[in-house]
Amino acid sequence: MEYFNLNDGYRIPKIGFGTYKLNGSDGVFAIDEALKNGYRLLDSAVNYENEGCVGRAIKNSAISRDEIFVTSKLPGRDHKYHKAINQIKESLYCMDLDYLDLYLIHWPNPQEDKYVEAWQALVDAKKWGLVKSIGVSNFESEHINKIYEASGVYPAVNQVELHPYWSSQKVREFDDAHQIITEAWSPLQRGGDAFKEHVISDLAKEHHKSLAQIILRWETQLNVIPIPKASSSNHQLSNLDIFDFKLSQNELDQITALDKIEERRFDPNQHQEF
Image 1 (tube, helix red, strand yellow):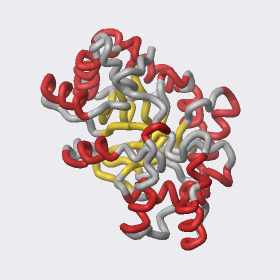
Image 2 (cartoon, rainbow, N blue to C red; image 1 turned 60 degrees about the horizontal axis):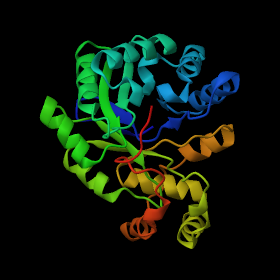
Image 3 (cartoon, one colour; image 1 turned 60 degrees about the vertical axis):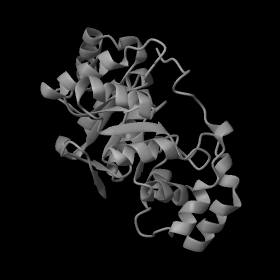
Image 4 (spheres, helix red, strand yellow; image 1 turned 180 degrees about the horizontal axis):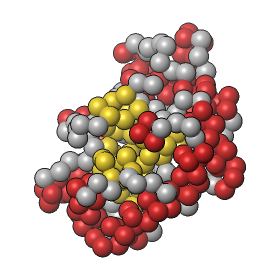
């Protein structure tokens, strides 16, 4: 596994395992397999309703806890300071863990405008050792500037929608300028229409790789952490097998040029998460 360095002194794997909609015993099995296959970053959230599932898989694993990077996310309904603190503790109880490696505010919910209060809770949770690193999800530059002005602390990570049809260029440029690592949810684009693009299929043939491997490598070379989900062991292994080749700058640009703003699923300034 290769790693990126975070702005707080910790490090994070360059590819993670998404757990959205992995629940119950089937979810535990899929996460067990992911850990066995080499994944070391597990991405969960309160609203995925599977923190217990993730925690069980970690307990089942023979892998040392300090080798597994565990992420969860605060839901919009808990942005008030004391509710946020309690929810972080609840996440730890659900996962049966002593600390989380990364905790994110899931959505800014700017219409309610309590995300600065939520951020202060995360800053304090880090000071108290409940979490090692703190970050945000689906934040635009104006949201990040606002929490920095209030706290003097930049997030270590900003997790956003990112795939060949939405490369989140402005967010990436802002994140890079402030030493914030960008993560990609939906890195292979739910629905997979990007798989039909000739640019991607041609590059797959050129590099003797799968369509998914081309996309995931494009993301890691943009200094983005993709967090694909895969239930089957074969797909899990295939998604990890991306560090033995490189795309040229021209090839990276060809994929980035596929941007289609209409393919973006949510506008963070409009979407309300509860």
